[in-house]
Every structure is written in C-alpha cells, then in structure tokens.
Image 1 (cartoon, rainbow, N blue to C red):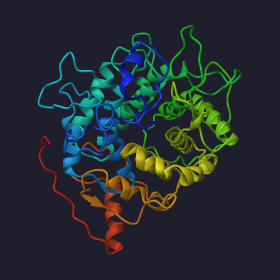
Image 2: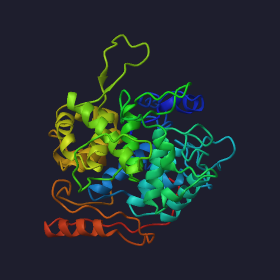
Image 3: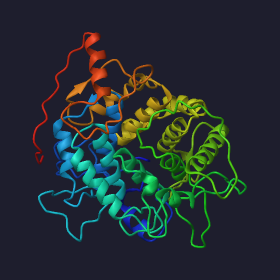
Image 4: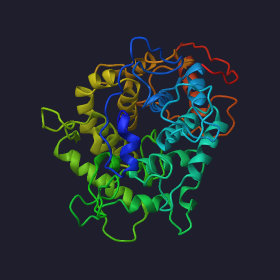
Length: 417
C-alpha cells in the first residue's frame, strides 16, 4: 500500500509484462490550467491514483469517526463503470466505459473496501465485488489488470475487498480447485530457504521467488482475510516460521509476519532501492512500506514487534505524509490506529486534521480521537445504508458527551460532480 502501490505510469505495462512490482512514485502535479474534480482529495494529478487515494482517505477517516462529505462519496462512486469495475481514474465520467477502458483490480478492491467501511452505497460495493469475482485467474489470484498474471499485492487487496463484502474467500474456487489463498501461498518462500517466510510479488522467469517486503506485508493481511483497515488482533503471539508443505493460510500469514518482525528487529524501518538513474545509490527509508508492515504485524497479533517502527514513523514520517498527500497521510493514520498511537498527535502532527484538509469538508467529525483507548468502529458490513453504523453512533455519543455538536448531512441521490 505504498502511496500508489503499483505505481504510477508504468503500472499497466509492467504487470502485463510480468515484471517485478514497480517502485512507488509521486503522482505528477497537474498543469496550471488543469482543474481538479470537485470532491477529490489531494492536489496532484489523479491520473494514476485518483480512486486509490480517495478510497484510502475514506478508510482512514472511518477509523477516526470522520464522515466524508456526500460530494466526496459521490465523486468516488461516479468513477465506477457499469460493470462494477473501477479504473485508476476517469477524467470524463459522462462517457461509458468500453473495451478500451483499462480496468484496475487494485482501484476496484480498495474502493469496495472504502464503501463498505463507511457504510454507504453498498449496492455499488457489491457490484464491484461481483466484477472482481468475475475476473479471477485460473490460479485463484488476481493481477493488476484483468487477465494479467496474478501477483501478491493485487490478490491480497482483492481478498480484503471480497471478505469485507461477506464473500467466503476460501470457497471461491477455480476449475482446478485453486482459491485466492492458494495463489498467495504459492508465492511464499519456505522457512528453510533464504528469506524464509517472505513473499514474492510474482515468480521470476524461472519460477524463482524473491522476497518483496511490500508483497509480504500485503500477503499477511490477505491470508488472514483482512482488509487494509484491519486494526489490531487481540491474540498476541510470538512470531515464528513454520516449516511444511501443507500449511494453513493462517500459518503462512504468520510466517510472513515473522519475516517482517525479524527484518524490523535489525532497524525500525524498511528500505527501498534507489530509483533507476538516481545519483545516490544508497537505499532510502520506505515510509509507506514501513507503515504497511506495522499494520500487518498488528493485525497478525504482533503489535509489540511494531512499536519501535511506530516510534520511528512519528519522528521521521510526518513530513513525508504531508508532501505525499492523502494516501500517505492515511497510511500513517492506519498504522497509528493499529498500534494504539494517537493519530491526532502523531509526532506532533494532527494527521486527521491534515487529511480532512486535503479534501471536501467532512460531513461530521467526532472528538476526541478513538485511536488510543476508544471503542473500535463496527465492520460496516450491514447492507442497509440508511444510517450510520453502530461504531459511528458510539463515536457520536462520545462527542455529544464531551459537549461537541456536529451536523449530520442527509444523504442525497447520486450526483455527478
């Protein structure tokens, strides 16, 4: 879940060619004459990450009891094709999607998760989930685009979306009996091998598996059937790598968590290779991947192994988040929430306020922050979107008790921004 996990401009080409996961890069700034769509979060060119950053913002806001504006939700749903799929970004939504439209499994999956979590437009979320099921590969997984080779990141985020819509992922089998979990487990490096427990993004040309930290963090969540905003597991475990050929998805996920814990034990942050052609060949800290690893460790019962990384993020990543925009800020909020840190005072920065300022004014905001000690928001899987979920109502009650009033906007019919 890097600022745009699959990247940017090279995403489609790279995945279709079966290349390794592309490095995340910042989206280019729009030209001075370009106008950003109303309702969109962020100020950079949305061509490659519009749906992604909007959805990630919603997920982070939900766990902090922030209700996104109707305008923002309408913008996201307006990006959806009639088939249920999303692209990375559609500049002209008045034109229907056709055979030339490049569908994006990652954008679809995160949009589905976001709509489920905010408990709005459930029919549109279900439509997206149905499309994802229809483009499952024969090996049980998903690629970045329909028909492209399965990869760990795409498969994991689709699993999270389907699980949040109530689909029994383990029963989603292909003709040969493969499931989404099967696809992920084939990318797991055996414990007895070098980098044992880690996951590859995709197999190499000769079928070899090369450890990929981003793919590992994603796969831990995927094999546990959890979405991006998964929070913390109450079952605290000692990370270990279990050998064997007949492991359960949970055991394989724990192997991945063990690899992440061992890696972060050496230093509290993950690194990314320098960009091709960069003058400085020294690996640089990867703030986004570190935040993802924190979420994966917390979700798999190893929150204690992520504390040093959270502290490091508090000291070093807030400037990156502000520059990176809504997606980067949301990643830090998710990491803070998963480990019990205060997202409204994270390294001296109110990340929630910062995120809210990057888009349309929210319909409602509850204070104080629920992250450190407050109740967890509900799953939002109820198909009835006529009202706020139980978790949000609890948040509203807390706010009222503190003497804070706020206006709940009436949901309007779908509008094009």
